[in-house]
Length: 266
Image (cartoon, rainbow, N blue to C red; front, top):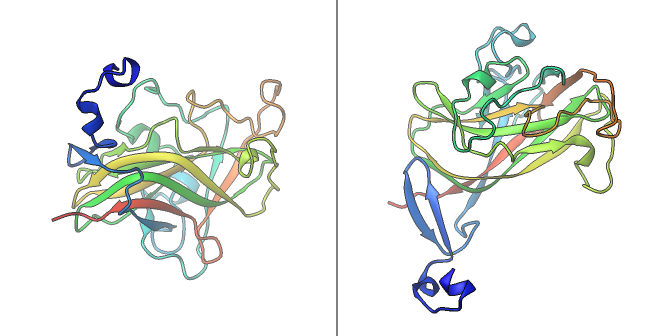
């Protein structure tokens, strides 16, 4: 305030332009730019647990698989894989009970839901630093002309607990605005559509033995208003319909999340 509001010359001019807190290592670090010039943008692809699809939570879709059964893999799918499906009912949205709190929170209550998909890497052999902007590209189909998609990056600890690394206010997309915020475009029900979800940022070191997880769902209430899936103007619709969603991850539809990986300095 002294330097920039009062014009008093002090040590502020000598400070580095960027200072970040790196979770995992739990240290402050000075940088010269953001995003960092040494960033490697690495794609991690959504895959089925065995190449056969179904990343849903336990009991969903009759799979009986545990949360996190979907995989995040370094390589893209090379053949057909069954999509992962879930139903988004706006009358029962994913509710952020502690939405007013910031910082990492245990995701167990969320990732156990039938309408939340989880994709997780194998335990990491080495530390992995992710610092910078994150983008998720999803190939989706929906039974509705408009609906929402939300993603969350998580750090899964060796004890199985998962903590979010991105804010509840980020990683959200209303499908009608997927190409333009001023020219809404409805979905064609059942037609594969590519959506890109941006706005997420973090700085975290996934320690060896930890895993990277991406959660996918269609609501985050009350941080975001519910989409009633009708395509009608917001604030005037009086009806809600359930959207039947699918996340595609096959050779023709490589859904992925691109992470800003920072090479570790010895």
